[in-house]
Image 1 (cartoon, helix red, strand yellow):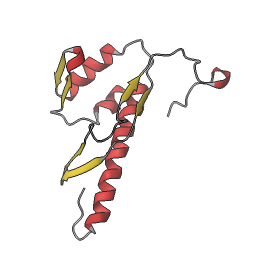
Image 2 (cartoon, helix red, strand yellow; image 1 turned 135 degrees about the horizontal axis):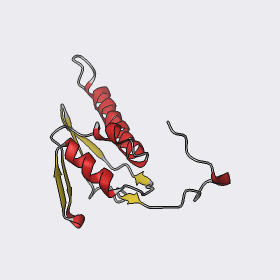
Image 3 (tube, one colour; image 1 turned 90 degrees about the vertical axis):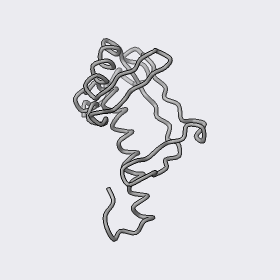
Image 4 (cartoon, helix red, strand yellow; image 1 turned 180 degrees about the horizontal axis):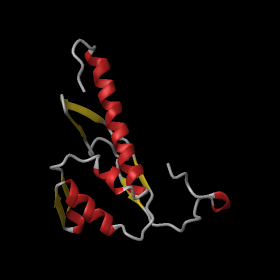
Length: 125
């Protein structure tokens, strides 16, 4: 969000931080299956395209319905590697996957005790 009179370099850094937080919220709410909150990271008219699965969904509600159905009964762990974020306009940003070699999203189904000592569960909030 641009604030009149704010230093442009400071504004750019604040905007990039906002994108990072949005991406983190996307992963957290998706893995916790908090579908209402997860849907809020998308614009109402968002478009989801997954060519590998031949999936195209238009609109927030359709995206949430499709992904929540596909992940029902699974446990996911997502790792989002932060690439280079470019602020492209007052309300837009992009991340160039070609410039960030580690910008992959890894999803894995795992047993509930994997990687946790004493079979502890992650905090619920």
